[in-house]
Length: 348
Image (tube, rainbow, N blue to C red):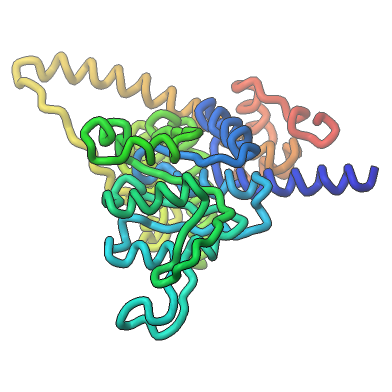
């Protein structure tokens, strides 16, 4: 019984370590978490795809820490940051005397990741020569350090990530088909931020807390207009862009409230024919009102859920934290059909 309890505790700890940094309550994120848990239990290669800034490395780390390899290293390598002539050496290492400047033995990243996970970020940029070397590593689980006649065994799991269309690159003969199939045993897609906008208020609050503590700044609030704009914005740079905007605001803004002008969002104004300007203004105004109200409702509901979760349904403490009276907070909870008992320890 004690052994079973220890295993359960360990499993819960692994789950928190693996998924705790993937923030959000949207259906897209819940589905992503479920898929990560499923993938983590199978010791196969994984190809993670998604736009820049969506959190592909976070997903890779989650897969590692939820897997049976969690006690061994997670070793990331940015394929786009290493020149081709150095890539093989970085990956496999070398023996003393392998080349002119090789004055001592050096172990590569494959050896460093032994027993754990090797994460290949931006795998779509590697050259054909390196693709061949990587294929052997995946296919035979073997490699040779430069200048070493002996073949070594590699007990590693490879997780790769890309923002490129590898299937299309295969069709264009820009990426080896056999390597693509070896990497893509299991695939994982990370949705862009614009497809999970209901998570933005939670992400904003997380980054506010993180950078306020990191830079020793007072915890700032976000104006209603700024939050509405962030929810409406397309975020081409995804979570990385959102994080950058919040960090900049925390560091640079002297006031206690972050306004829309502090965020410097690159929103393009649509061109409208002058003859239909008056009519278009009415349409835009009505659309804006509806969009704004929807965004406010979504923000309020997500904020309340997060608040109740944090204070385990304690309305008095939650009201103090929110800067509202208990009656005002009750009214908001009633409006969104949220009952504190759902979040209390007794109600779980």
